Image: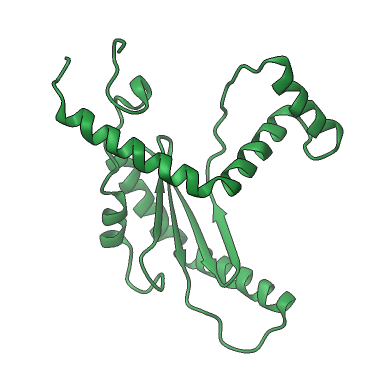
Length: 184
C-alpha cells in the first residue's frame, strides 16, 4: 500500500470531506413541498447530484403532449427555484468539497441541469481502440471520446445489478479497513 493511500479512491479522495451524510443533509435542508418524497442524492468524488420527483400533472394528455407538459413543468420548477438552489448548492459545496448538480423527474421525463462532464484519461491497446474506431466509423459516435462515453453508458445500463453488488462489496471492504490497524 503506497504512500498517501487512505481507503477506496486512494490519494485522489484523501483530502475530500466525507459525504456519507449528504442524503440526510439535503433531506433536512431542502424546502418542504419541492418534491413528492425524498430526493435522490448521488455522490462521487467530483459532484453531488440531487434529483427530486415533482408533483404529478393534472389533466388528460396524449403521449406527446404529456412529455411536453412534463418537460414544461420541470422547466418552470427550475426557474422558480433557481436562487434557492444556488444558495443550497453553495452551502453543500462548502460542506462537502464537491459541485452540486440538480435534476427533476416527472412521470417518464427526467432532466438534469448544471451537471459536470469530467475528462477521464485512459490508455487503450489496439483491440480496444479498434472498438472505438468502429463506433466512430459506423456513426454511433463522433469521436473516440464519445464512443468511450457511449460504451460506459451501455455497460452502466446493462450491468446495473452487478455494479450495485460491487459497490456493496466495496463498502464492506471499507468497513473492514476502518476496523484494522492504522498504518500511518
